[in-house]
Length: 166
Image (cartoon, rainbow, N blue to C red; front, side):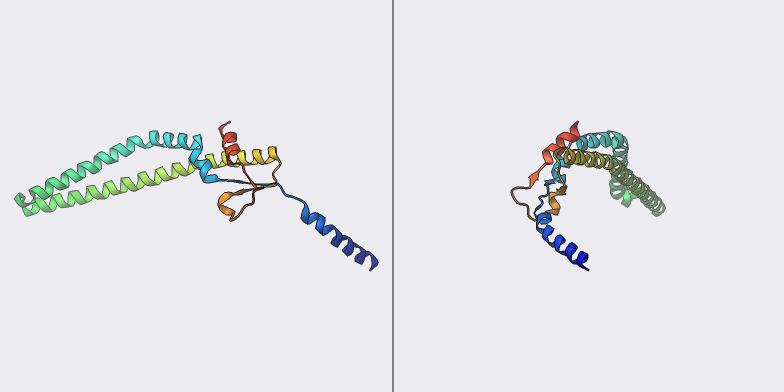
């Protein structure tokens, strides 16, 4: 029993020392880092090149469909009922086809964007870990998660950005 009381009292005397131990904390602004990251620009350029052919083809098909719709509207009065019905069905089918192609394009573009941004996110994580280890930070928080930070808390976003550029 004496040992238990002694251990408890010893623990109580050590609490202030543990509480006063300073943690080395910093913040990063991931939105800023991603906006300034050259990798993000490279991803955008890569995706633009990868999808520009499909995008321009889709735009041409959409323009042709709109031109044909306009021509139909202008010529509908001179068409026979069967010709009008046939043209309407054809336009609806083409509109449906273009919509399916557009949806597939958007899905593919979104999937590829997520794949590439996941790579950038991994590089960001590696840079954050490297900066934390180099500077001896105990905790690196995202600025969006911090409601208040005192003047002692350092923003290391620029260092992370530089580390990512290596």
